[in-house]
Structure formats: structure tokens, C-alpha cells
Length: 362
Image (cartoon, rainbow, N blue to C red; front, side):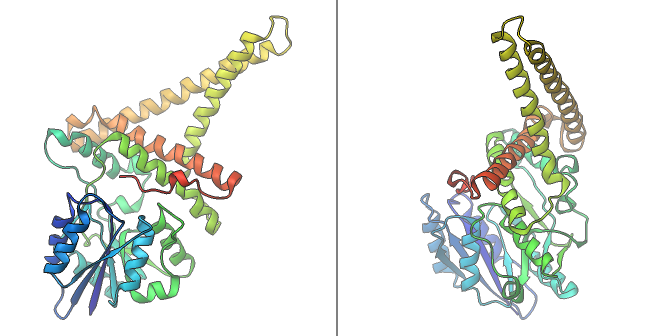
């Protein structure tokens, strides 16, 4: 069995050598051979030079250019070059169990699924300097923050809607095509949706183990999830897909909060400028009060829920994280919510994505 590993990357000078080393040390089943294709998104931080040196030392590794600079174009360029019967996607910011590729292959052979993968496990680095990253990872893993997504369930085995990263027999791409290059984010969700709509199966195995290291700042988490939220409506529009509740809730909550805020501000402004005898002044005052009450109610309910969830998470992940968890959880939810609202605006009003959201955040 010939196995191809495909990897999109850009500006990963701090991580690329350790990643290549981990792939080179993968324990493959007897009789399996490996090739690794890394699509570099025109890095300018020294990644290209390190990658070139590694490829020269290990003939199994190959570097190609990814002028599109986003994940979907990089994956497709790798797939076009890959000659393996089985194709495994890896990410530079993830650490893999030594049998990761072997487990992917075994799961596919046992299930015959069109895409297989493991659960998405996040972990922060050790030390006080990484407290925020640990909080980001702990919130990421919580079902209360993730909305119960099975991809975060480390013990789940069975059919799923999507898996982390993915591994496919070559026939999957021949049957369902490659990744949608119009999507900067959510290209894996869209591809998995296409597989399921075409009668294919996606399988998660707890035996496929890896650890993902998330963003280490709250600002970066906000920007990342705003981009995730932005691109989700474009996926739903393309397939006429009804969104899962967990994808809708952040946007609905943010929309309700903004509506109440606008009602409060507009009502207060009108009640101030209208003369006391004006017919609409009382209505404006009521609108301002209604909006203020809505803002207070939504903020209080959300704040109480966030503090309760932060307490639950910190009991398991470390009490030192409690001080960061409310901000981190809000970054996840408000980033995704604001992004999805903007995405729906561009889908329904402009009919096309905004180029400002066309570049990956890191």
C-alpha cells in the first residue's frame, strides 16, 4: 500500500522541522510506503528554506508552491501530485501519535468509509506563559462551548458528519471531487457534506489520536472564529443545507443583542429630539426601555451561563484558567456570531464573499 500525506502550510518556521520529524517517525504497517507533499503558501519567514533542506535530506518529502495561499488550494495541489492509494491530511500545528497513519489506514480497511479521522483534541503548552492557550484549549474541548459536536468527543466511535483533518481512499476524490477553492474556511466541512449528500460515509475512530495546539491569544481566537462563522453561510447556500442548531445559535444571539441595543439607542435618541407633545415620543421612550431591558436580560443570562461554564471547565482543567475562560468563551461565541451575520449579509445582499475575509488568520 502506497500512502500519500498532504500538508498545507504557510509561515511555519517555528514548527515545520518538528512536524517533518514527527511524520518521518510514523510507524507504518509492513509493506506500506510513504510520500509527503507539502504545499507552501509562499511563506516569507524562512519556512521555505527549512522545508527545502528537509526534502533534500529525505527523498520521501516533496515541497510545492501554493500561490493561492489558503488551505483548499494547497490541499488540491497536493492531491494532484499524490500517487498514493490512500491519502492522509496532516496539519503542522498538530502532534500525532506514532501510529496515527496506521490507525487511519486500519479504520478505513475495517469500515470502508469514504473519509476517516479521529477526534479533535486541543491542548495548551505547559507553563504560566501558556495559561491563555490552555484556557482556549479547555473551552474548545467543552461540549457546552462547542455545542455538543461529536468531533470533540474523544471516546466516540462511529459515523459522523465531519472529522478532524481526514484520510481518504483515492476513489473518494475521483467520486466527489476535491476541495472548494472559493472557501477560505470550512472547506473540509463542505467536502464532507458533499460526500454525505452523494451517499458516502464518514467515520470517526477514537484510536486515531492527535493533539492540536490552538491559538494562544484571545484576539486571535476571535479573528479565527469570526472567519469560521463568516464562511459557514456560503457552504449552506451552495448546498441548500439547513444548519445545525450549534451553527445558528451564536448568530441569533448576537443579532438579538444588536437589535435590542439599536432599539435602545434609537428610541432614546428620538425621545430626546422629539418635542414633549409629539405623538411618537412616548413610543420612542417605550422602545428605549424595551431595548435596554432586552440588552440587560440577554447580557445577564449570557454572563451567568458563561461564568457557570467557566467554573465547570476550570474544575477539570485547572482553577488558574478561570480568570481567562469567560473572555475566551466570549471570543469563540461573539467571533462566530458576528462572522456568521456578516456572512449571511454578503450571501443575501451581495451574493459573493468579501475579499477582506479571503486571507487565512493565524
